[in-house]
Image (cartoon, rainbow, N blue to C red; front, side):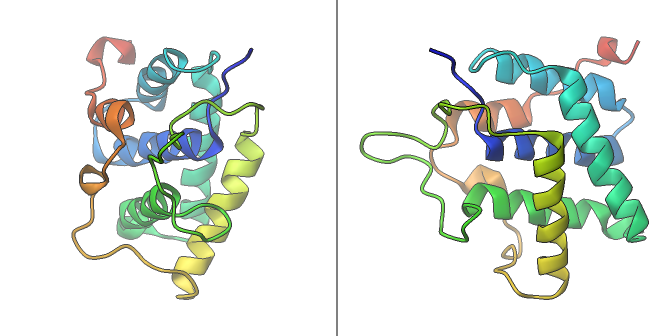
Amino acid sequence: MSQFCPEWIFAVCSATTAKEFLSSENSLNSISRKFAEGLSEKFTEIKYEEITACAEEMLQFLSDLEANEDAVNYIDRYIYRRICFKSTGAERKISGMFSSELDPAKTHDYSVKNVTKVFRATIFALRNHTVTDMPPGWTYEEVEGLDWLKDLLNKPTNILDNF
């Protein structure tokens, strides 16, 4: 049976790739490789090109909005929304009694197109104050049950992947 990456995890890793690109000297491809390798250890193989394409779309959208120095803030707020809330707006419970949100999905439900569509909608909703915004000082470190995902998000990018 295939074990697909849940859409929200792919989205968070793609957004973190964009954020790290803006905040470091690393290339998009090197950051994407880190996430593709980490996710492929848990799920059916994910190609780094998919994560790169998604991060590029996010960055292009923020550029079109002329987000400038607010770009990282928008990405952080998006990551908060994806980790803490389902696409329906319901609060996400990472670990339950019988299952976890980190468990593989039964179907391949993520794509660059869908993730960027949700990213755009989330940024517009945040700008229009129609959804719950990130509390001041929030980080994913506070979220219980993220386990291996937290480790992957914190993993440094290998500088050799830049070459």
